[in-house]
Length: 175
Image (cartoon, rainbow, N blue to C red; front, side, top):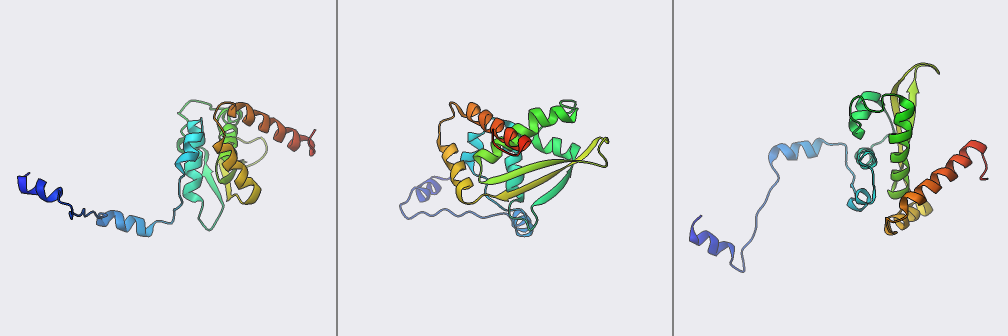
């Protein structure tokens, strides 16, 4: 570095030039996956699986379709479940998928649901069906309010919300 370069860089009228590499421009131009991953949503989540699910849904949020079928092993990798962990699907649902769905639905501006796909009722699970949609109105406002509340007590609020939803879904009415 020459001393004149340092002098030119510190001059009051100095400008900074930057650019996007040509290869990256081509990739960005052809991409059909655009949305904004909101940092405040990811930081509000307590589970790495929920953050991974949120990022996965954000990448798909503005696509023409709102349902995607994903192979189970690929889904496990995308959500960040290590191999040979939660191999039974009921454990995967209980400890990974349901808590992640709950956090994403409560804290983000996108609603998500996951259905397990089997060839028949007793067959092993082969894929998951990921469904998503942008929130509007009261749902959107409720997610912003929850994000703005303190993290202290959030797990208890989420647990109470999950219990309320399970009571509502099993009986059809809120008990």
